[in-house]
Image (cartoon, rainbow, N blue to C red; front, side, top):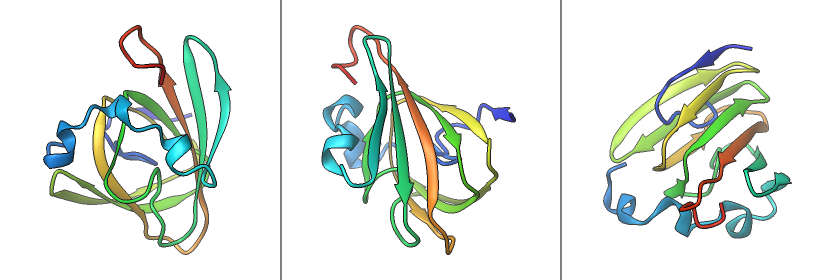
Length: 131
């Protein structure tokens, strides 16, 4: 499996916009978008979320949103647009692409014509607020 240290490219991609002032732990993606997230594992040390994105939909959440520090594993090929604090990049990911991201606030759109899936692995810390 390919690994990289690409900062913040969720689904390849993990913020310094106004929303970046909101603590990443303040938003629980699985509660905000329960139809798109499936909690695979949730224990005192780690939470693993499987995210499913339809074409034209956000890749790891809807609109501008936040994540705590996490590892992402791409499960399906994806072409995505990432907007992080006004910096916009377009990225193409392959199955198995893996990367780490610190806490981030961004918007990521599925530009491809197919359903995208990824695993988002959040490592819990005493100050992470439970996720």
